[in-house]
Length: 88
Image (cartoon, rainbow, N blue to C red; front, side):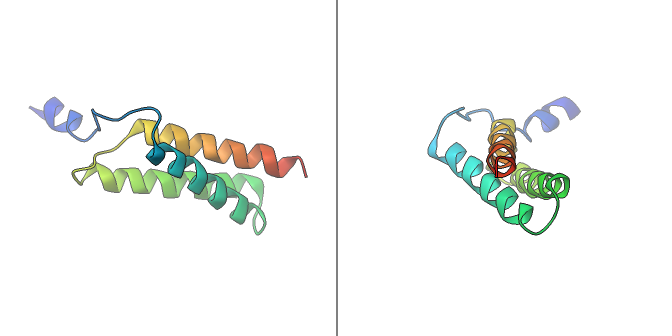
């Protein structure tokens, strides 16, 4: 019974590519880039990742559910921000 309640925490009908995934990528990129200007690179990544994780955990307790695919796109946005900001 515990396994079924744990599995209901995760999204099952989630697609890898959608407009929602682009939003996750873009918002994570913007958060990383904005915080990169004011704090160091490592903390910018922690902040951006934490905000995305907390948002997904919050979704996990709602009907939208936690999406590891959204987290993938969040991490990709942080990585994109890292790559673009370190080339300057």
